[in-house]
Length: 566
Image 1: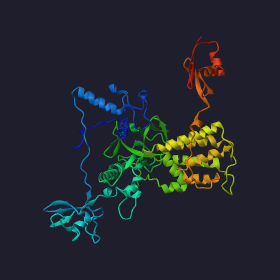
Image 2: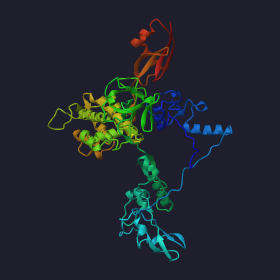
Image 3: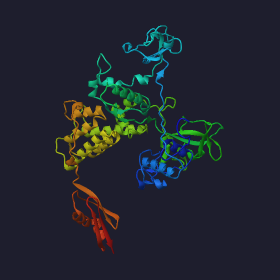
Image 4: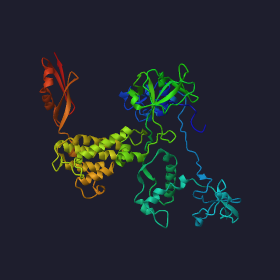
């Protein structure tokens, strides 16, 4: 083996592939990592939890962060004399040449006497010959009659050029330098690049981290060491966006009518209790066949409609037979599976803004997420509510401002909501938490849509917040709101911290530790004010009748608790 020891570790609660394996074969899925120590028994929500946390249900490791636990395990093993910690490097030499014509020539020359010799600097760049024959398989540079034959720059004897070319991943990995500086007489200008690099934020798929970014960082560091660049690193921060999978598929299993398995993916689901359904927990796949674990009976997989299913805990079950657990899984989009979502169709049916908004609303940027058409419809309806909040749809002749949108002052609650939304959306964008930013705007819309009148001074900054997510509808609303210059050139709205303070808060009132009422008090209320407010609440008056208050516990801004007897 080149790496590791060959031992296989399975942690189904915290590795998605292990989770799916354990779920399929009915294996226990213990939790050993939780967001906090008091969530040791938190149930799994249909998938493995792969985030950070502390160890639970792990003996002497309980409460430790994962990295701390690793060190503690190694220390315990070393103390017991059972082994020792060792760092195993996975780095290996990496071949960058390819046996093909299309690529950058490698500037080296092979001489029988001198060995491998670098090409003279004044011969660079080496260009590919144009008179090549592609009709014969293989690398045409090997067969070229003149291009590959040169004199050795060291001894002057006969020699040959290197006929391999650089992998395209290698020779295309410095584009960000060219983007920032495009002089006509050289690859890039060092001082011009210094204005723009390093790149603050690089967003790309995880596949880029393996090859492209490896080469990009390598070449950047080489050029830095040679004095051609000011910065030692090309990128400050890297975020790998998750893959968008096809829509979730729901598969049920039943005893096959024939001895051979048939994957009935085009067969409509029949609501028939006599179908001999088998719970997916009792199904195993062997030699490309589905078998019932206990009897070995051959089963067939039936793709069913989501409407025929129901969620039960972490599982999906048949509505027609709730004892039957079915498989739910989203797959990578592929033409062969028939689950490819054509973005052109979404744009035609729902508009470009809906597509754009939904992709950002699906979930955290880094997570892999299944496509769901009901989600597209949901953001489409949201944009409709935004439109109706500002535009008068009753006017068929022109797009005009809604009569409820007026030049009126914001009240305290509206001011607080506006500034909280600006703050939240701004900070969420900075964190690339686009899904939560959209949720904030949905909350704003829900609150303001029904208000009469709606201050125009709240609608204008809201449209500015919406612009990065749904630029087409935002630009139209901007014009409806009477703005003449394009929204693109407007300054991002700013929030005022002083406007975020709640003037009134809701606190719980307990009697002997049990919740009995909730009251509203001024945000700055002290203990005496909170106690007085609690004692005049009608519910609390009734609950305290005939009882003696032994002690009053008040936590400003949090709660009131009366300890009573009698």
